[in-house]
Image 1 (spheres, helix red, strand yellow):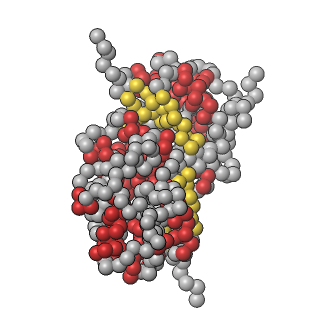
Image 2: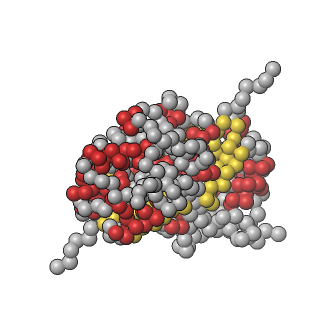
Image 3: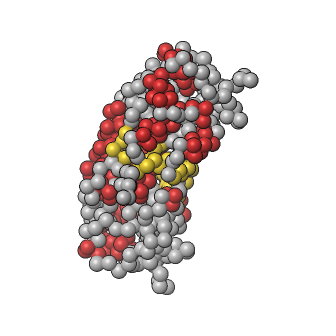
Length: 234
Length: 234
C-alpha cells in the first residue's frame, strides 16, 4: 500500500539554533521540509555554509539559497560597517531595538517563502521567530506574524482559489533554554548550527554578541555544553 | 527663507505606463520621489532601461535597481519558458488569473520598498496597481493592499516608534484610458515607457500580449496615438 504523501512545508533556514530546531519540529510533525536560505549581504555569511550542512544532515527534501543584496539599503550593523555590540548584560537584551536590526528583513524573507510555497503548492511556512529570549526585533512579535498571515492569504493565486497558508512559529513563546531542550529531545546536533552575529572567517563564534550570550545562557540552563566552536576554544 | 523639505516617497518604478504615471502623480502631490526598480529575471528585462530613462527624465531624487532572481522558483510565464498569451479578447482580460502571474511578486516588491522607506525615514510608498483594466492578479486588489499596509505598520522599528507608513495606490480604480488621460495632463512622455510582456531585444513592443492590448485601447479611447515603438512600425 502506498504511503500518503507528506504535506510540504517551507522552512526559513539560516543555519542558526532557532531555525534548525524549527526544521526538526516540522519534520517530527510529519511535514516534508523544503528549506529556504538567504544570502543577503550579511557579514556573518558563514551561516550559509552552516545552513547547507544542517539541510544535508537533517533530510531536507530541497534547499534553495536566494541571493538578495540588502546592502543596497544599509541601515543595519548586520549588513554595513556599524559595530556589533559586545558584552551586553544578557538580562537587558531586547529592552531596546538594537543596531543589528535589519529593516523589514522578516517581511522580505517571508515574501520569498510565500512565493516558493505557492510554486510548491505548500500550505505551510515555518519561521523560528521568538518573542521572549530575543533581540527585540519588531518583526518577531506575534501581532506582526498574525498580520503577515492575513496579508498572505490575500496575496496569491492559490489564496484566491481558496487554499490558505499558515505561518507556523513554534518557538514564539519559548525561552532559549526551552528551544534547546526541545531540539535535544528531537536529536538535533547543535554542533552543526551557528548563531554568532560576528564570527571569524573560519566560522568561529565570538562568544560576546547578543546572539552568543543568549545561546550560551540557554545551554547553561540545560546543564549542557554548547557544541559550537568559539574563538579561544582548543 | 528656506523652503520646507519635501516629504520623501518611495515609488515602485518599472518603466511601464502605470508606474510612470504614479511617479508623476507623487511628484505633483509634493513628494520627493525615490524610485525602486527590480531586475527579477523577467524576460522583458529591457523595461529596466526604460525605468532608468523615466527616472532621469522625471527628476527622481535617487533610483536603486534591486537584483532578485525570481527564476529560482519558476511558476510564471514572465520568468520562465511558458508561452506568453497573444491576441486575447481585450474585454475578457482579467476574467482569469493568467500565466503571466508571478507568485507573490507585489508582496516581494513592497517588502523591499518598505525596507528602503524605513532607511530613508519615508512614510509613503506609491505603487501603480490597478483593479479595473488589469490582468486579474490577486496582489492588485484593494483588500490585499489594505492588509499589506496593516502588516507593514507592525513590521518595522519605525512603526514601533509610532511612525506609520501609507501605501498609495492612486490608479486603483481608474481605467487605462483614465490613467493615460491623467498622465498626459501632468506632461508624462509615454514614449519613454514600456508595457509589453514580450518585447524584442531592442525594446520594441509586440502589440499582441495583454499588456499591449490594454495599453493600445487606452490610447485609442483618448483619441491619441501611442508613442511607444511597436514591431512593424516604420
